[in-house]
Length: 84
View (cartoon, rainbow, N blue to C red):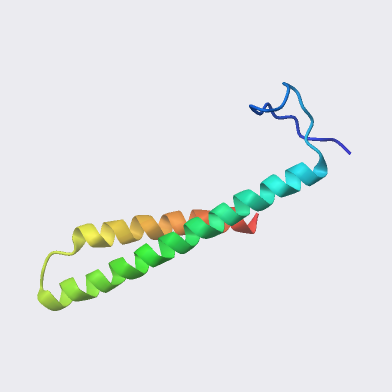
């Protein structure tokens, strides 16, 4: 079994991470991605409601659509990261 070698601020250069340290770091990254996904989902829901209001009022909604498209693309990338 080989260990990942990373240089961290509080560890000596070339410190080998144990399997537990790698799993712990992976869990932290996964939790961060899940939190980011939830935040994106909330913003996207808000933008969707804004789009509905703009469509009812007849205003230009192109910018809001672009923001929503970018958020969807970002969420897809986050979901891909979470699935790996």
